[in-house]
Amino acid sequence: MPVHQNSTVATNKLLIGNCKIETSASAAGTYVNLGAGIVSTSAHEVERYAVQAGNAPDPLEGVSDETIKVDFEMIEYDSSVLAAIHGGLITSTTTSSVQTIHAGGNSTITPRAFKLTNTRYISGTTVQTILTVYNATMDTGPSITWKSDNDTDPIAVLPGSFTGKLDDSRTVGYQLYMLTHDVLA
Image (tube, rainbow, N blue to C red):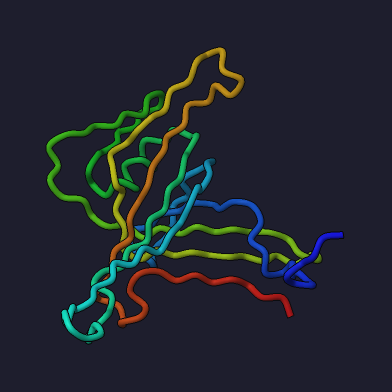
């Protein structure tokens, strides 16, 4: 019989499933759904510093920078969505029959807000976990992972990642992201 380190699991605290990915010009703005896909990871990355004394304990330690990195894959091609998440790096035109991306020569990227929403149903109640990143830019331009026509899963994937940086216009301690998790009573 196995020995368990914990005797119970609070199922209402589990994160089950994946997230809807959305973007907006600002955290308070209207969000656009990026479509079908999957979030691989989200990680709060901390760069630490320490002042070295040489002959005594380090007198000062702290954080020199913080970012949040999110990796994801999309499977729906929408040129307007791709243009939105890339913050001006690329542009999009759409006619009644063709969606086109144009790229090259843009020298600035405008940060975007991103929101990841995980929704599940527990005991008939909707429960959400929402990660809002206030100030982020894509790490690369658009990318497509093409597959063989004969692959068992032939859908081409559009991988991407963005890095959120501190938003200095927000209050200290609230500058990088917000993670909320509904709690059942």
